[in-house]
Length: 481
View (tube, rainbow, N blue to C red):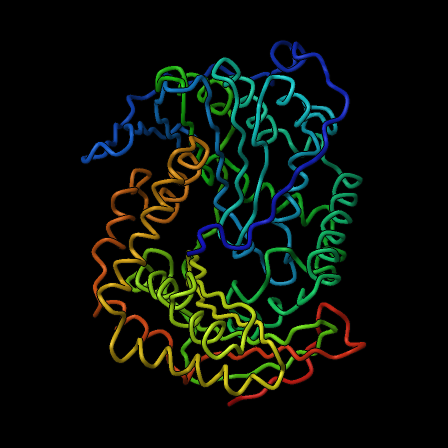
């Protein structure tokens, strides 16, 4: 299972510490009188697995979620902007990721490079941000008595980022993003394989055709007006939600959010509609040469969107295929036939559609035909007969264990509630999500594999070790099968 996709994190080193009085007193943005706090809606878990979440919407459209948990004197703050690389216009690839960086550089009342230092001086941990295809989030965990500081800092960059971030800031962070791309893609083993595969799997008209990291060409041609316009369009209260989990009360948290975020005006959001999934009408093969030691082959299919029918079943199918030495592909390819060094399988779930991946690192390049035959046979077997009852039970147990363990952290619950709100409109969908897996059947997994993973319609990506080709890889052939 892959729930965080391919998000990018941003962590800046703390610089000189500034007096907290600057941030807690006169430095606060001047705001008009806040509107009275409306009566919140309480959404509760019927099973009692988790504490209740209380939800309200500010007049400007900001969604606020509060889970009261007094076991530890900390509060996790998680702010979602419901914008990712899928929302970028053509020739504007990388804008969402760029802003993930820019947002840490300072705002009107927060001097350059002091965001981290201010929070860390107050005892905060887990300060970061990530971007993926569907959303951008910012988060920190603070001592309970520093909740006001965290909310003020987040509100200042929502309201006043562009008062500080000008052409110089955007130019410097554009260079940071381009360097990140060089390190993680252009100068990393197999680094460009994902870029070539994504472009082949998703048509150019679909927003998932592009990677979140961005392209140097699009970033270089962007004007200051382009990037400022992107911010003004998407980083507005009515395109955001804030999830607060920990040692606070709904009354306290709502009052603070109203104080700092309430006066920020809402924006006019563009109309968004989910594009149709591409029709699986042909199979394709990419041949990539790379100066690496191990040949690699990947098989990929377009698959159902997160929470759509078949999504959970494909997560379970991935576990049946490769989640330990006794699972089908690992046992066959790594241990029995000794054709591969490793096998990984996952369903990469997204809002507008997902993709299902099987990746095999070969022991020898000439093992490709045998590995392809073994993978095809394993998929055909699952599509015809499904997993055994024992295999399905083990896959469910594995998922349940990981899922429940993840809920121990307040920061993870805060993020999960925001994700559920964006994808399902229900921040309290923990039981609903878990039930998808618990209620999955052998026939359900069989049908999902048969529907979504046909031989006709798959993408095969073959990476061939080639001296002098560059470690990131270069595409040398793309053909229909």
